Length: 440
Image 1 (cartoon, rainbow, N blue to C red):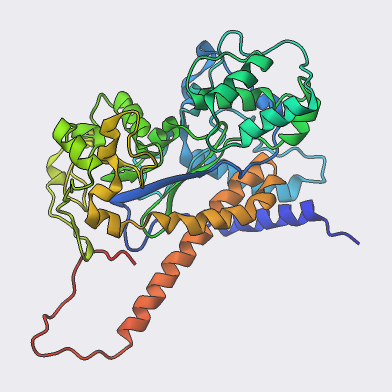
Image 2 (image 1 turned 60 degrees about the vertical axis):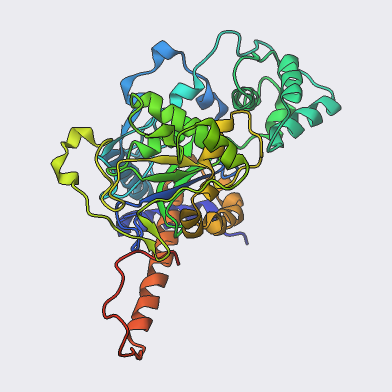
């Protein structure tokens, strides 16, 4: 006798919606204004959704409500829908909280004390606008070897542009744009079962995965399910949602993130030096190549992040980009790479975004801190992949909430054990404790 999996899943979501979890998404060590955030994404945490929902819109069809979302209202409606589903499913009564799927349906989440307001940007639809000549009108048939070649390109972490161009030519996909643009168009095209059924079966899971930001202790502060694969726009939406944007943002696309967010904020967000650790003079670039350039951040010490005195209250609320961070005491912001794969990148100034140029910060920020979370998500991909859209969104937020509770509880328990352990203090030892946050 098989278990009624769908019914058990509905009961689980019904129960957790009734519990009204706080979902604070806050680290007990970093507080509501984390000075450093690490960006990551898992493009394989997918779900089942009809392919026609991914049809690219025309720019003149994009509405204001498609580029911003009231986070509180949207999540409250989802919770009510989960509760009502337990009463309406199996009955002839329609769920009164059912909503149509829109481009802002994949609502992000960050804690109430962390976010700038209940209304936050969700502009992902703008990275998926329709371009003329983008969709073919008839079914496309491939030979088996051609299918294998296209799947190999789509599954590659770093596909060659020549392979992408060959695949795009075979599908009639426009060749303009970056490598990521070409990848997005290929994946979108193959979501349509009518165009190529065999390929659709192999790529039937839809969505761009999950994007999230964590502090240096691996506590999740922000997450957002994606329609299309991760881009700098998703980073921008996240950073502009924080009441106090972090001083340092670490990601694998740091240069693109800095450019995109500065474009959206009139060059006010990542400054000075466009988010680099120092100005892009020839001397600094050469010193970075030779690995003897070092940058010192006064708010980072060997003990961790040392809170600095700020005058944030003297700034008007409307000028939050110029307001010093309440922990680091600076209005400077940096967009950095955790490591550089290329010694001689295409743009030499990108060397100045290397986290390793700031040794104290690099020691504090263990870039592998997000790896345990990535491994956890890896084990849950199959579970998420069998969910409908509502259950997928609800489960992701609950998943990260429980992850955060576990980490925070582990730290508070360790502190309690330390306070209960007798310690000998020598006569020449200083009394008191440092106020900085440790990196452990």
